[in-house]
Image (cartoon, rainbow, N blue to C red; front, side):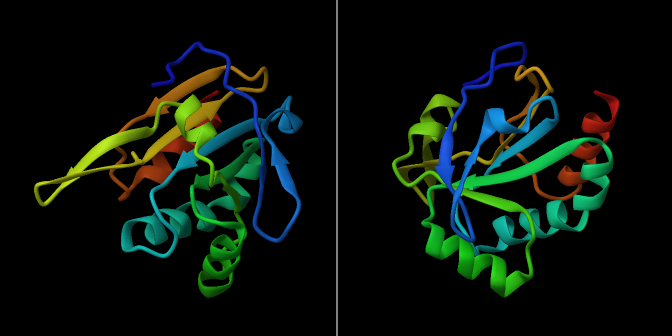
Length: 153
């Protein structure tokens, strides 16, 4: 798992709406990377909507928000259209970035184990260093907590 003080692993991934997103291209701005399990599921939808509702506030704090899952660009596009999302959604279909950040883990539900993304948020400072990590995120109130941390950075 990635930890505070480490250099954030750089990446270039395809994104919603076409094109790609490269983490280092946002320097010297700050970035919130939030890893989520799946497009258009209840918790992931609420999390995306919460971050989306605060986009202007994150921008005022010099921070870009990027959601990342293993869903395809096509899935991200559908998710954005359905819920009116303006956040960047990166597609990590191969799972390399999820592995680099240590969020691709064995999970368990109803007695069944499987591999999946653990809901995690990472705040990266303008130099590309991990400033804060939230593991096993509980969605309610999370975007507000991340915004407060971004403002304080």
